[in-house]
Length: 354
Ligand SMILES: C[S@@+](CC[C@H](N)C(=O)[O-])C[C@H]1O[C@@H](n2cnc3c(N)ncnc32)[C@H](O)[C@@H]1O
Image 1 (cartoon, rainbow, N blue to C red):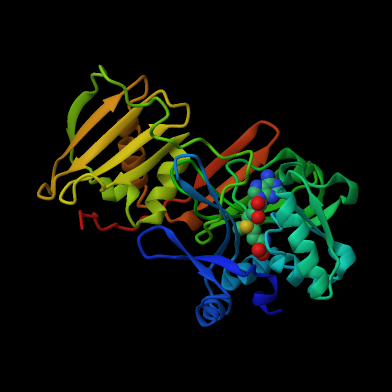
Image 2 (image 1 turned 180 degrees about the vertical axis):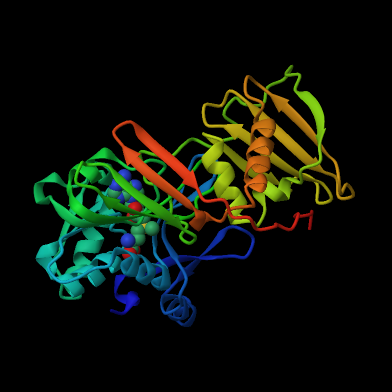
């Protein structure tokens, strides 16, 4: 199933600086084609707010990740599958090709995207049911399902997904915490309506609308007259917010509703890690002045001491041997979510500033 059939003429490609640059098929057909047939996720919709802040709101998933999720779902003949997040329709097309149009339902919250995907699917010879609506509610009219595959990430598994699946059903669900969007949860639905599973260490999907937190540092967080507590930390901010996704994942699970953002804009020699809670009651910053190697300046303000929480979570993770994402499991019951961790017993290298 060629992915180009499902892509709009205007896509956004990573610009190498953490942002995205427009690639217009009419202006640069070679680049557009190369992107279409690459194994990269391609942003297909960007929302820009009044302040000029741009946020990707839909994308065509990387084909390699799509295949990995399909393998994880263990699709076999005769199954009925619910996909959450139709996007371009590419993933739904693969499912429809494998199982038949009548066995695939895909839910997309954005009506324009849902219409475009329906048209692309039809042009490719497929007519799975594409529902315009909130995927958190599933699609009860066509339940029960043998599989649910979400292509947007969640911070909690919606109850409707377990209510609409059969015992033994598998759910493949990208994961997100406020700290990091990373990992893919593979759950098995039990006969009593609960579910249990494990995380796999891949996948970084945009967060499902309805479960996104506001992560806006300007939201009245920093005010004149605040007197943040000052201290020093020996823990490098790169240890919890750098390239170690296992550490980031563990911190995210243990420190609820706290996000972070690197700030290098003001001064090239100076790097600051900002932390804030989703409720915008507390913030913290950790500074690296370009020279320090063993101690970093910390400021913390508000009822939560966010850096202390993050540092404690990192200590806990390191003491357990630095478990990887795949060492984590999750049980979902009516009472909530319970994470379990298998101790890794693996020495970790201490990260340092770049
Ligand atoms: C990464 S894209 C999906 C990629 C898609 N499966 C494909 O193959 O192109 C995520 C999609 O999830 C959709 N989405 C976000 N929140 C949603 C929600 N609450 N219900 C349904 N769809 C949602 C977004 O609009 C976006 O199109």
